[in-house]
Length: 284
Picture 1: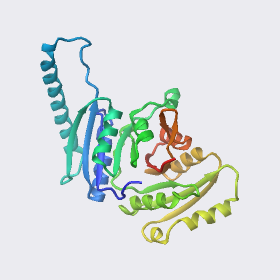
Picture 2 (picture 1 turned 135 degrees about the horizontal axis):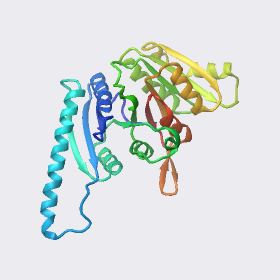
Picture 3 (picture 1 turned 120 degrees about the horizontal axis):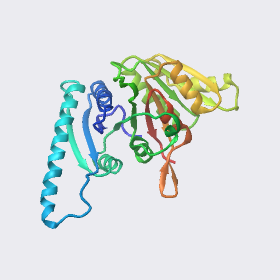
Picture 4 (picture 1 turned 90 degrees about the vertical axis):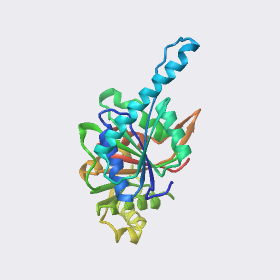
């Protein structure tokens, strides 16, 4: 996992109605961690299928005018939604958003990516393909996927963080990162474990309590939750019951043919959660 708390945050925005919400989350975290923001917008240019060599210079100039206008729009959005005195820079790139975001992240090596997810309903909610999901599937950096439905801005402070864990080697680090988020505002940290069948709730509860370092308990209120049932369903239920601002998930990346995929639990939670989701990649 990358450095946390982050010192450099990459915020990718698409200039949709969700962009102010995404920027407000990035600004809130930048203020909390005294981090520098890299604001990125990328989109594919639409050129005529056929054009004369003499038109190339004209098309290039037109493209630069468009990018300049986008920079002005981004600067206005940043000034309206990012706290004053926040250090930031704006980059506008031409190309497929997923490819450009991943390339930029590889070159600049930020500690955290912040992106928006508009959310979907009905049958469309079951399909893959959004920019945020594609970046999460391929990125090797922690990625915060902001739920942008309903126009709800970022909270003034993160009051409740849900950290679901399995009893593996990544659990403690996930808890520590969740605690670092909670410590910025004195929020509650809900550490939970869910599985179908297995050991008794009491045994799992003791294991869960033992996972939480004493240093974490001294910095924030910790609540342990143990559930039986589908992990994704129980995480979604717990997030709603505790009104979680953020769900923190570790995601193991796997190769499937020529694609990188993440686990079913992460995918289901990302698509159906009402909360913002922080995904921590941990390798296969």
